[in-house]
Image (cartoon, rainbow, N blue to C red; front, side, top):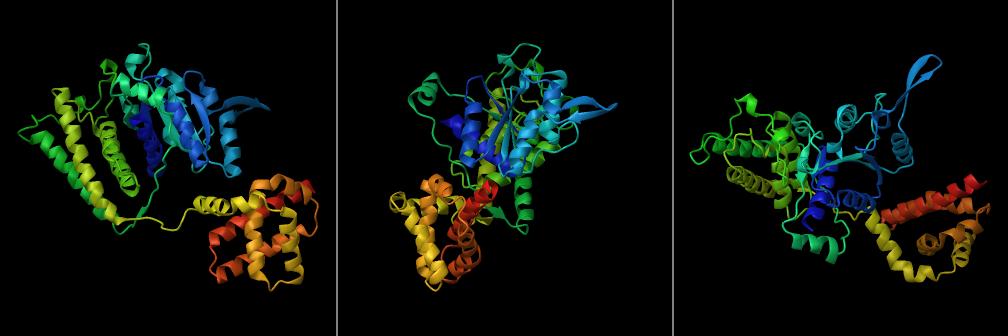
Length: 435
């Protein structure tokens, strides 16, 4: 599923690089579906704003008269994602059908995308991922459009199928796969100057070849400012939309290429090709033919793929198992036992040992690990039964104050310790709220 992987990687790269991405394609290509699948896989909430259905006030907020003075009320969608953020859940703000809007609504959406603020100046919660989608102009009525300067502030990702046969494979025969979310490493600040120079020199090589080379026909002409606005109004190409070269796009390109280099994405050529096309693919709009433009994009893609391969030697990945992976592994290892465990008996063993045999730490650790997994599976009955149990707090205190240091001392996985403490504290919180 070429488009599926392209969209999944685009969302992940946008989150890492903090660059706004615009998914462009014909209607019915699964843009909304993939955004929801990515969000579910990452534990994000999805908040959708449909460009064709929202008013300016619904996007940025409502002006109301309060005791003779005007105040702006926050829009409902913003209240939802702010509340979720306060509770620890991040959101994907998905702005769909951007190209079907106009006037105040589109201006409001673009402000939200680029400035990440609503009408009263409040910013989107930290960690909110903003993704946008649009259709090609040929799919829309004549009055629908997005200006080329606005498009120049996006990394455009074109979505297309190579044939009707592949569409049948992707949307009929094959089930939608679970998104494979890329992992990201880091590049030290000491290495970043070398990375910037490498990508900068490659850009100079590309621009030299296509502005003065004998085989290029002088197709890049940055001195002709009249040609640096992409002619979107007369664009009838329903297959792809490219961006013109600007200083902003060059900076975006650097940040996106670095993000790709930091990722564990293996098949990077299609993604790099899409990014090159979506950030500098239109050049300065002086290509004599589509063939020349395609050759320019391919040459740039090959050059940047080579750069990324070299840059990856600077990338450091965290080799410690992810928190979620460790938690899943813990539960899976004891699932068979835990699902049939007598929770009452486990709890009584911990209770007895904490009170009378605190030196039996190894046994307490084993029981707590098994109890944690058993609660994970049978938690509702356990919580209900011990909701008002006064001794429960002492067990939680033991977990927080004794178990964790002991687990560290005997070199038990500290992530497991954190998991156990988190889960039992959560139950303790339920008890307090119920009281």
